[in-house]
Image (cartoon, rainbow, N blue to C red):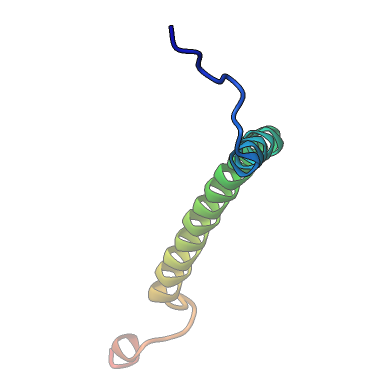
Length: 78
């Protein structure tokens, strides 16, 4: 019967394992709020882009109408 050493004898491997587990335990509580924050920024950015595009199209349409009170060349020729 072979006896297997259950305790790792290399202290470097022990430290790598401890830092890996500890690091992920420290990052896990922060990860979800950060993801929600990034998603919120993306949604707000998309909304600002949509509103900006609508304002530009509306301003272009109003500018294309012109001033109805100002006489044009067509009306002055009559």
